[in-house]
Length: 279
Image 1 (cartoon, rainbow, N blue to C red):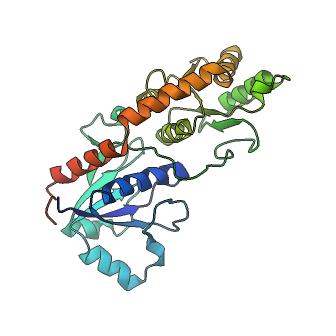
Image 2: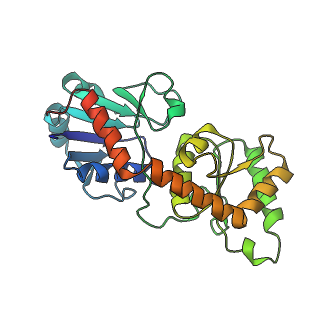
Image 3: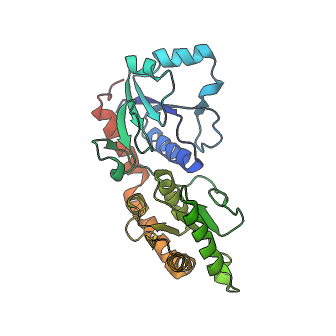
């Protein structure tokens, strides 16, 4: 297949979001796809080679790229002001994690749950590239609990108090475990997948996106009401053998459903569908 594409990444800001982009780029390049990746700002969070900082280009280099390079562009995140110039002469694909994005190209999603208005689905893939710090999303960087909860400060407080109650013991099993607690947001669902690949069990409410990415038995469900005894039981289960077994189930699900080959297939199929198999 003679295929080439220009990627522009602006709205995927978290490290695990950048890792999804990097994994997909490597999967495409391994198939001989000619791919040029530009990232707004710096490139340190990308663990894949050959990512160019858009801000490092001169004005003339940017204009040359916008006006002449590539007949197929893929926008990841938010559209820059000059995006309309690209769309004047090239086909464009757009992938967003936002709840209600303003689409600036052929609309695509990572999750079926978000693709309710006819958006195409791209499969992410989750092979980790480097060690992550436990402080990402955690209120206590050195704590075993990794809390990635974007909303509801009262719930966050309940979780932290419940974990204190669970881990306030001399039992060694609570001193060396790592647990990720997430809400049902798209970015934290991606984070949960990467952490699971590292053997870290996930605790979450029964959110559709978490269930979609980890599988129905791939995480420990916390109570919908958020009562403290319920959180304590979920956190305690995650710290014990149940957490390790659940994490193993999720890893199998991820490898079977979100492998690099399937992810590349989904992108190639998408690019073909917008009529750009010859560029």
